[in-house]
Image (cartoon, rainbow, N blue to C red; front, side):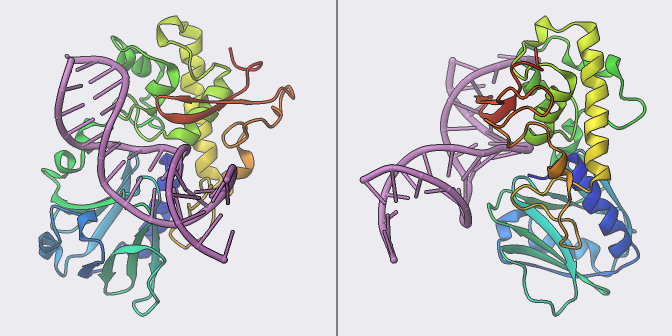
Length: 271
DNA sequence: AGTGGCTCCTGAGCGC
DNA sequence: TGCGCTCAGGAGCCAC
Protein backbone atom coordinates (compact mmCIF):
# COMPACT_ATOMS: atom_id res chain seq x y z
CA UNK A 1 0.00 0.00 0.00
CA UNK A 2 1.72 3.16 -1.17
CA UNK A 3 2.23 5.76 1.54
CA UNK A 4 4.15 9.03 1.62
CA UNK A 5 7.64 7.56 0.94
CA UNK A 6 6.40 5.40 -1.94
CA UNK A 7 4.51 8.31 -3.49
CA UNK A 8 7.53 10.59 -3.04
CA UNK A 9 9.68 8.02 -4.84
CA UNK A 10 7.25 7.76 -7.74
CA UNK A 11 6.92 11.54 -7.99
CA UNK A 12 10.71 11.91 -8.16
CA UNK A 13 10.86 9.40 -11.01
CA UNK A 14 7.88 10.91 -12.85
CA UNK A 15 9.39 14.38 -12.70
CA UNK A 16 12.39 13.21 -14.69
CA UNK A 17 10.24 11.25 -17.12
CA UNK A 18 7.31 13.50 -18.03
CA UNK A 19 8.07 17.16 -17.25
CA UNK A 20 8.20 18.86 -20.65
CA UNK A 21 6.09 16.18 -22.34
CA UNK A 22 2.88 17.03 -24.21
CA UNK A 23 -0.36 15.20 -23.40
CA UNK A 24 -1.94 13.36 -26.32
CA UNK A 25 -4.74 11.11 -25.10
CA UNK A 26 -6.24 9.05 -22.28
CA UNK A 27 -7.53 5.49 -22.49
CA UNK A 28 -9.35 3.72 -19.67
CA UNK A 29 -10.21 0.04 -19.50
CA UNK A 30 -11.80 0.85 -16.12
CA UNK A 31 -13.53 4.22 -16.65
CA UNK A 32 -14.84 4.35 -13.06
CA UNK A 33 -11.29 5.14 -11.97
CA UNK A 34 -11.44 8.45 -13.83
CA UNK A 35 -13.18 11.48 -12.32
CA UNK A 36 -15.15 13.53 -13.20
CA UNK A 37 -14.97 11.63 -16.51
CA UNK A 38 -12.81 10.76 -19.48
CA UNK A 39 -14.10 13.57 -21.71
CA UNK A 40 -12.76 16.19 -19.26
CA UNK A 41 -9.27 15.32 -20.42
CA UNK A 42 -9.78 17.45 -23.53
CA UNK A 43 -8.83 20.25 -21.09
CA UNK A 44 -5.20 19.23 -21.37
CA UNK A 45 -5.12 18.40 -25.07
CA UNK A 46 -1.61 19.23 -26.36
CA UNK A 47 -0.70 20.81 -23.00
CA UNK A 48 2.79 20.43 -21.58
CA UNK A 49 3.63 19.02 -18.13
CA UNK A 50 5.30 21.76 -16.08
CA UNK A 51 5.65 19.99 -12.73
CA UNK A 52 4.96 16.80 -10.81
CA UNK A 53 4.56 17.06 -7.05
CA UNK A 54 3.17 15.22 -4.05
CA UNK A 55 0.59 16.24 -1.44
CA UNK A 56 -0.04 13.59 1.21
CA UNK A 57 -0.43 10.38 -0.78
CA UNK A 58 -1.65 12.22 -3.88
CA UNK A 59 0.43 12.55 -7.05
CA UNK A 60 -0.19 15.82 -8.87
CA UNK A 61 0.76 16.47 -12.49
CA UNK A 62 0.54 20.13 -13.46
CA UNK A 63 0.04 21.34 -17.03
CA UNK A 64 0.92 24.72 -18.48
CA UNK A 65 -2.72 25.84 -18.69
CA UNK A 66 -3.05 25.31 -14.91
CA UNK A 67 -5.01 22.09 -15.10
CA UNK A 68 -3.86 19.33 -12.80
CA UNK A 69 -4.11 15.57 -13.14
CA UNK A 70 -4.18 14.01 -9.69
CA UNK A 71 -3.65 10.32 -8.97
CA UNK A 72 -4.23 8.40 -5.73
CA UNK A 73 -2.91 4.83 -5.70
CA UNK A 74 -4.94 3.75 -2.66
CA UNK A 75 -4.28 0.07 -1.87
CA UNK A 76 -2.75 -1.53 -4.90
CA UNK A 77 -2.18 1.18 -7.49
CA UNK A 78 1.03 1.30 -9.52
CA UNK A 79 2.45 3.69 -12.08
CA UNK A 80 4.85 2.65 -14.77
CA UNK A 81 6.17 4.86 -17.55
CA UNK A 82 6.92 2.99 -20.74
CA UNK A 83 6.99 3.34 -24.50
CA UNK A 84 3.78 3.68 -26.51
CA UNK A 85 4.01 0.22 -27.97
CA UNK A 86 4.92 -1.57 -24.73
CA UNK A 87 2.33 -4.22 -23.82
CA UNK A 88 -0.29 -3.30 -21.23
CA UNK A 89 0.78 -3.73 -17.61
CA UNK A 90 -1.00 -6.43 -15.61
CA UNK A 91 -4.29 -4.94 -14.33
CA UNK A 92 -3.76 -1.76 -16.32
CA UNK A 93 -6.81 0.50 -15.78
CA UNK A 94 -5.85 3.88 -17.22
CA UNK A 95 -3.25 4.96 -19.73
CA UNK A 96 -2.08 8.52 -20.34
CA UNK A 97 -0.20 8.97 -23.59
CA UNK A 98 2.31 11.79 -23.97
CA UNK A 99 4.34 12.65 -27.05
CA UNK A 100 7.43 11.09 -25.47
CA UNK A 101 6.09 8.15 -23.45
CA UNK A 102 3.08 6.38 -22.01
CA UNK A 103 2.05 6.47 -18.34
CA UNK A 104 0.30 3.28 -17.23
CA UNK A 105 -1.84 3.24 -14.10
CA UNK A 106 -2.46 -0.34 -12.98
CA UNK A 107 -4.45 -1.34 -9.95
CA UNK A 108 -5.51 -4.84 -8.91
CA UNK A 109 -8.22 -3.78 -6.45
CA UNK A 110 -9.60 -0.85 -8.41
CA UNK A 111 -9.58 1.53 -5.44
CA UNK A 112 -7.20 4.00 -7.07
CA UNK A 113 -8.46 7.16 -8.79
CA UNK A 114 -7.35 9.62 -11.44
CA UNK A 115 -8.86 13.11 -11.43
CA UNK A 116 -8.57 16.14 -13.64
CA UNK A 117 -9.35 19.66 -12.48
CA UNK A 118 -8.23 23.26 -12.64
CA UNK A 119 -5.80 24.54 -10.02
CA UNK A 120 -8.68 26.55 -8.51
CA UNK A 121 -10.88 23.55 -7.76
CA UNK A 122 -8.83 20.34 -7.92
CA UNK A 123 -8.21 20.33 -4.19
CA UNK A 124 -11.92 20.11 -3.40
CA UNK A 125 -12.51 17.61 -6.18
CA UNK A 126 -9.85 15.20 -4.94
CA UNK A 127 -10.11 15.75 -1.19
CA UNK A 128 -6.67 17.34 -0.99
CA UNK A 129 -8.30 20.37 0.62
CA UNK A 130 -9.07 18.29 3.71
CA UNK A 131 -5.51 17.11 4.24
CA UNK A 132 -3.54 17.98 7.34
CA UNK A 133 0.02 19.31 7.25
CA UNK A 134 2.96 17.69 5.48
CA UNK A 135 4.96 15.89 8.17
CA UNK A 136 8.31 16.48 6.46
CA UNK A 137 7.82 20.23 6.16
CA UNK A 138 10.12 22.23 8.44
CA UNK A 139 7.01 23.91 9.81
CA UNK A 140 5.65 20.56 11.06
CA UNK A 141 6.50 20.42 14.73
CA UNK A 142 5.36 18.86 17.95
CA UNK A 143 3.12 21.92 18.46
CA UNK A 144 1.47 21.37 15.06
CA UNK A 145 0.63 17.81 15.96
CA UNK A 146 -0.65 18.56 19.46
CA UNK A 147 -2.81 21.43 18.14
CA UNK A 148 -4.36 19.26 15.45
CA UNK A 149 -5.10 16.50 17.94
CA UNK A 150 -6.77 18.85 20.41
CA UNK A 151 -10.36 17.84 21.10
CA UNK A 152 -9.93 14.43 19.47
CA UNK A 153 -10.42 11.10 21.14
CA UNK A 154 -9.02 7.71 20.34
CA UNK A 155 -5.75 5.88 20.19
CA UNK A 156 -2.38 6.90 18.77
CA UNK A 157 -2.52 4.77 15.64
CA UNK A 158 -5.89 6.16 14.66
CA UNK A 159 -4.46 9.68 14.91
CA UNK A 160 -1.45 8.76 12.77
CA UNK A 161 -3.72 7.30 10.08
CA UNK A 162 -6.04 10.32 10.06
CA UNK A 163 -5.10 12.27 6.92
CA UNK A 164 -6.73 15.43 8.26
CA UNK A 165 -4.33 15.49 11.22
CA UNK A 166 -1.14 14.65 9.36
CA UNK A 167 -0.95 13.75 5.67
CA UNK A 168 0.71 10.71 4.15
CA UNK A 169 1.01 8.07 6.86
CA UNK A 170 -0.55 4.65 6.21
CA UNK A 171 -0.68 1.34 8.00
CA UNK A 172 2.93 0.23 7.56
CA UNK A 173 4.60 3.46 8.62
CA UNK A 174 2.10 4.01 11.46
CA UNK A 175 3.25 0.76 13.09
CA UNK A 176 6.90 1.60 12.50
CA UNK A 177 6.46 5.09 13.94
CA UNK A 178 4.78 3.71 17.08
CA UNK A 179 7.65 1.25 17.55
CA UNK A 180 10.29 3.88 16.99
CA UNK A 181 8.62 6.17 19.52
CA UNK A 182 8.30 3.30 22.02
CA UNK A 183 4.55 3.77 22.43
CA UNK A 184 1.84 1.17 21.91
CA UNK A 185 -0.43 1.87 18.93
CA UNK A 186 -3.49 1.47 21.16
CA UNK A 187 -2.36 4.04 23.72
CA UNK A 188 -5.21 6.50 24.33
CA UNK A 189 -4.10 9.96 23.25
CA UNK A 190 -5.56 11.44 26.42
CA UNK A 191 -2.86 9.52 28.30
CA UNK A 192 0.09 10.80 26.30
CA UNK A 193 2.67 13.15 27.79
CA UNK A 194 4.32 16.13 26.12
CA UNK A 195 7.55 14.16 25.96
CA UNK A 196 5.79 11.33 24.16
CA UNK A 197 4.24 13.66 21.58
CA UNK A 198 7.71 15.04 20.96
CA UNK A 199 9.03 11.53 20.40
CA UNK A 200 6.15 10.72 18.06
CA UNK A 201 6.87 13.86 16.03
CA UNK A 202 10.56 12.96 15.74
CA UNK A 203 9.74 9.36 14.81
CA UNK A 204 7.28 10.46 12.11
CA UNK A 205 10.01 12.50 10.42
CA UNK A 206 12.72 9.89 10.92
CA UNK A 207 10.73 6.88 9.71
CA UNK A 208 9.27 8.65 6.66
CA UNK A 209 12.68 10.03 5.66
CA UNK A 210 14.20 6.58 6.00
CA UNK A 211 11.43 5.21 3.77
CA UNK A 212 12.24 7.79 1.09
CA UNK A 213 15.98 7.11 1.31
CA UNK A 214 15.21 3.43 0.74
CA UNK A 215 12.96 4.25 -2.24
CA UNK A 216 9.85 2.92 -0.53
CA UNK A 217 8.61 -0.34 0.94
CA UNK A 218 7.83 -3.13 -1.52
CA UNK A 219 5.44 -5.34 0.42
CA UNK A 220 3.07 -7.09 -1.97
CA UNK A 221 3.00 -4.80 -5.00
CA UNK A 222 4.81 -1.47 -4.67
CA UNK A 223 7.20 -0.58 -7.49
CA UNK A 224 8.60 2.79 -8.53
CA UNK A 225 7.86 4.41 -11.88
CA UNK A 226 10.65 2.34 -13.48
CA UNK A 227 8.95 -0.85 -12.25
CA UNK A 228 11.74 -1.42 -9.70
CA UNK A 229 11.16 -2.48 -6.11
CA UNK A 230 12.14 -0.32 -3.14
CA UNK A 231 14.11 -1.84 -0.29
CA UNK A 232 12.62 -0.32 2.88
CA UNK A 233 10.92 -3.66 3.61
CA UNK A 234 14.35 -4.86 4.74
CA UNK A 235 14.37 -2.12 7.38
CA UNK A 236 10.94 -2.70 8.93
CA UNK A 237 11.06 -3.44 12.65
CA UNK A 238 7.49 -4.57 13.31
CA UNK A 239 5.15 -4.43 10.30
CA UNK A 240 4.60 -7.92 8.87
CA UNK A 241 6.65 -9.50 11.68
CA UNK A 242 3.88 -10.79 13.96
CA UNK A 243 5.09 -13.61 16.25
CA UNK A 244 8.70 -12.97 15.17
CA UNK A 245 11.19 -11.86 17.80
CA UNK A 246 11.67 -8.15 18.40
CA UNK A 247 15.09 -7.13 17.05
CA UNK A 248 15.68 -5.07 20.19
CA UNK A 249 14.57 -7.40 23.00
CA UNK A 250 13.74 -10.79 21.40
CA UNK A 251 10.18 -10.72 22.79
CA UNK A 252 7.68 -12.17 20.28
CA UNK A 253 5.82 -9.35 18.54
CA UNK A 254 2.07 -9.22 19.01
CA UNK A 255 -0.55 -8.66 16.35
CA UNK A 256 -4.11 -7.46 16.75
CA UNK A 257 -6.69 -5.32 14.99
CA UNK A 258 -7.07 -1.67 15.71
CA UNK A 259 -9.51 0.60 13.88
CA UNK A 260 -9.94 -2.29 11.46
CA UNK A 261 -6.23 -2.47 10.56
CA UNK A 262 -3.72 -5.20 11.19
CA UNK A 263 -1.30 -3.88 13.79
CA UNK A 264 1.99 -5.28 15.12
CA UNK A 265 3.90 -4.06 18.16
CA UNK A 266 6.42 -5.16 20.78
CA UNK A 267 4.79 -5.61 24.19
CA UNK A 268 8.13 -4.97 25.93
CA UNK A 269 9.66 -2.09 23.97
CA UNK A 270 6.38 -0.19 23.55
CA UNK A 271 4.57 1.12 26.60
C1' DA B 1 -18.99 17.86 15.19
C1' DG B 2 -17.06 13.57 15.96
C1' DT B 3 -17.28 8.56 15.56
C1' DG B 4 -18.15 3.71 14.23
C1' DG B 5 -19.24 0.79 10.69
C1' DC B 6 -20.13 -0.25 5.93
C1' DT B 7 -18.60 -0.14 1.18
C1' DC B 8 -15.82 -0.46 -2.78
C1' DC B 9 -12.62 -4.51 -5.09
C1' DT B 10 -9.98 -8.86 -6.16
C1' DG B 11 -5.99 -11.95 -5.41
C1' DA B 12 -3.96 -14.86 -2.02
C1' DG B 13 -4.20 -18.26 1.26
C1' DC B 14 -6.50 -21.61 3.66
C1' DG B 15 -9.54 -25.73 4.97
C1' DC B 16 -11.98 -29.43 3.35
C1' DT C 1 -7.61 -30.46 -7.97
C1' DG C 2 -10.85 -27.22 -6.94
C1' DC C 3 -14.37 -24.97 -4.54
C1' DG C 4 -15.82 -21.53 -1.25
C1' DC C 5 -14.70 -18.82 2.51
C1' DT C 6 -12.01 -15.11 4.78
C1' DC C 7 -8.77 -11.56 4.81
C1' DA C 8 -6.07 -7.44 3.31
C1' DG C 9 -7.02 -2.19 3.63
C1' DG C 10 -7.37 3.89 2.11
C1' DA C 11 -10.79 6.71 2.31
C1' DG C 12 -15.65 8.29 1.22
C1' DC C 13 -20.07 7.98 2.98
C1' DC C 14 -23.92 7.52 6.14
C1' DA C 15 -26.37 7.00 10.45
C1' DC C 16 -26.18 8.18 15.03
